[in-house]
Image (cartoon, rainbow, N blue to C red; front, side):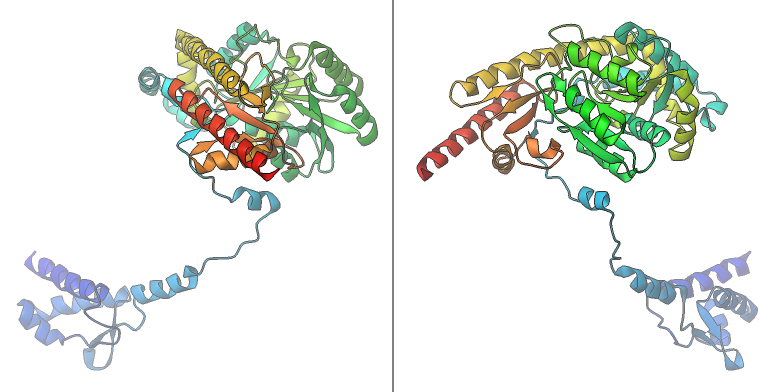
Amino acid sequence: MASATKYQRIYDRFLNEIKEGVLKSGERIPSTRDLAKTHRCHRLTVMNALQSLVAEGWLEAREKSHYFVSEKTPITNSLKQAKLTAKVPKFRLSKPGFSLREEKAKHRIEFWGGQPDLRLFPMNEFRLICADSLKRVKPELLNYGSFEGLEVFRAQVADYFRRSRSLTDKSYLITNGSQEGIYLIAQALLNPGDAIAVEAKGYAPVWGLFENLGLQIVPISVDEEGLNTEELEKAISAKKIKMVYVTPLHQYPTTVTLSPRRRQHLLQLAEKHQMPILEDDYDHECHYLSPPPAPLATQSSYAIYIASFSKILFPGSRLGVIACHESLLKPLAEQKYLVSRQTDAIAQLALAAWMKEGGFEKHVRRMTRAYEKRFFLMQEHLKQIKAEHDISWYQPNGGLCYWVNLHTNSRLVAEDASQKGYFFQNEKSSDFNKKDGTHLRIGFACVNDDEIAEGMQALGQILKKRKTKTSNLK
């Protein structure tokens, strides 16, 4: 036992001295005889320790049983490797990859147009639900599961959508957020080169997704009635549109609700041309002035319905839903298998339990009341600004933001606000042709009363300063 301890000490001593640079490459180690005397052990113990270091590449044995520090120790090899990889590699980014690399500046108050207020989420309540769900987890749940999603969760979603959206006779597939759902649908139904119609004012990341799939994107104008279906009809004839992507409840970014006339026309076009409608209903619960109209998917099997829990829960939840005709479920599930196989089972189980016990819908009601209050508060602040400046806005029935026309370059206003620590989305960021516009998309859901007051006061001051500057130039 004593010799084993001394063996380890000798081994550790030389290993550490080599690693720390006390012993340099090529340096000779004292003779085994001298080391045996120093450590008061048998010479064979010393030789065994040194031979172990030889075997590992730290030492070399040369003539007359002398030992030297290896010229190529594991450290020198790793250093050489580090030098090889130290240079920053130059990768050729794709066009979408290049556009996404820019880091976004952080601001003191951010008026994001589609962001929920995470401070309103009942974290303690949901934490208990998650903990209880974990206690009930069976081993088989931790294995690979259904591509479509957990049956218990899909059943709760189907029941909730039946009561809240009048959606019946649909098959459900759970996704990692709505963006994945959009990808799966486009990938399953379209081929590279196919034409897809989108709103000319819209959500740029979705356009990037379609572009990555090699689709021909056809922008269709949006007005006070929503998507211009007359223009869409002409585009169908000219470009053989294979699918249309639309946000009919609260059009992104303008917040306009698709008019009843346009809804019926769109559904007629879908039936006539057997053209799927990709219906993105990203914030259905946030409707205040009247009950929200039922989704297009309640009237036609050509409408494939996409929804997300991100606005209700929190963006990091990454739970989305596709509601579609049963004939589409298998091809969508096959695409899901190729992309991500399945969605987090634990998250589905926890949310299913919360929905079953009624806590989820209580949270939805609390959240909606809070956002409705901010909806009217923001309107009052906008009226105060309007009293002094030439601004106007479309009056939405719901949503999480206002689409405000400043009647001046909104990008420049947003840049001025950014320098003062406030973030507003300007029209250019959601314009298909990336043209400057006059609108700001001003969110109210993710900011509290004091933040709304401060931000709107700052916006009024910025508009006043720009007005004075313009007057001085004349």
